[in-house]
Amino acid sequence: MTRRRPVPEEPTAPRGVLSIHAHPDDQEFTVGGTLAKWARAGSAIVTVCITSGSAGSNQYTPLGMTREALAPIREAEQRSACRVLGVSEIVFLRFEDGVLEPSIALRRELTRLIRRFGPDAVVCGDPTVRFYGSSYLNHPDHRVAADVALDAVFPSAETRLIFPELLDEGLEPHHVTAVFIHGSERPDTFIDISEVLSIKLAALKEHRSQMGEWDPTEMITDWAREQGAPRRLASAEAFRRMVLARA
Ligand SMILES: [Zn+2]
Image 1 (cartoon, rainbow, N blue to C red):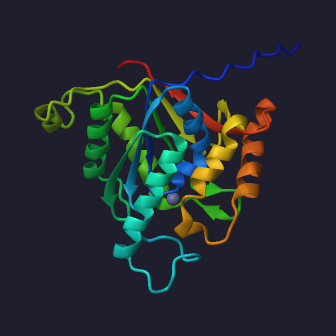
Image 2 (image 1 turned 135 degrees about the horizontal axis):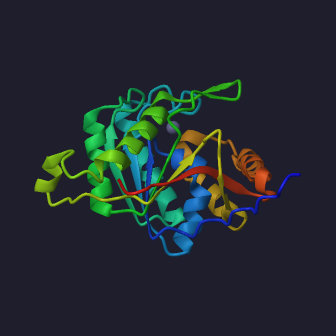
């Protein structure tokens, strides 16, 4: 006999959220719907963009473009996208795009931000995913950003004597309650984004330098349907959620 397990309810919007990504537009592709929904429910959301996306993508980056010229364009686009989503603050760490390393320097920066903003929830990618399907190798910057974000959440942010120099800046340890990991192969938490799918699309379209004439509507709508399918939701973003015990 099989017993039917009850479908878990969607978690309520966290009070404070830190959304950590490698490049401008990563957030809008992956978790824009969830953030738009949470912002409208009253969450205070801070976006962290580790690089400024100065390498762009070959498809739409004009041949004469330089890294120096592209970075401010992409930062402006990210600010516009955050405005559309309802994200209240954005931090650019300005690490170099395309060559991100899982360094202690990066971990210290992310730890500093977690302690400074004290979020209940951190949103990031899944560092363990190397392959998506049979045609997309996960970008190394995405893996590094996710890996270091998790290391900053635990143990660095909550352990007093890791990065003691942060104590000198007045940044006390902070325990993050939950981590929402997007792009996971084992999602267990599904955020219904039906009501905010149009906002997700509008935010994504702010990244004009990376889109050219391409309209992402069909692809994003398909992704949302696929991610919602396990819960019979028309549109969702799926996460692996870790609810962290206090050490
Ligand atoms: Zn990216």
